[in-house]
Amino acid sequence: MTGMARIVWSLLVIALLGAIVAFVGAGSHRAYAWLGLIACLAMVATASVFSRAWRGLTGLAVMGAAWATVTVVLASEGPGGSFLIVQDALGLAWVIGGVAIIAAAALVPRRILGRTAGVA
Image 1: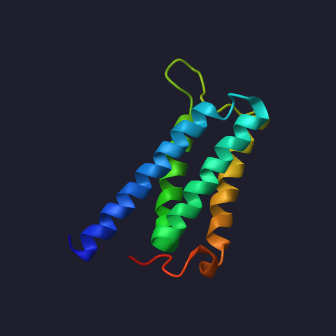
Image 2: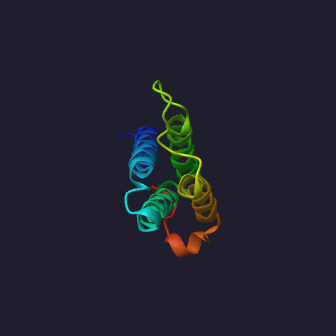
Image 3: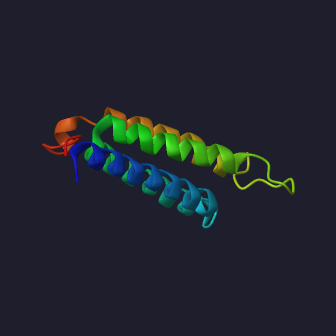
């Protein structure tokens, strides 16, 4: 596989990871009240650091864009008038916390992520 194909495939995998994290988190952040929220935000943090370590800031941006897109869609009103992400303390903590964690992952020094962060 050529270098460009590897990059494209890795970014597609990272986008899929961001979408999966958003779907699982949107459905599960209310499962066990605040403990469920913390577990889902830990999942966002893990995916963010993984994406940043694998493909650098580009990978983090792709993961963050996929996460944000799915989260916005799931926070919108559904056909029956219901919401999956409700505008209450847990829902807002899920959305704002996820954005803050993704932004914080961008600030992690590259040397902490490993020698080959963003290269492969």
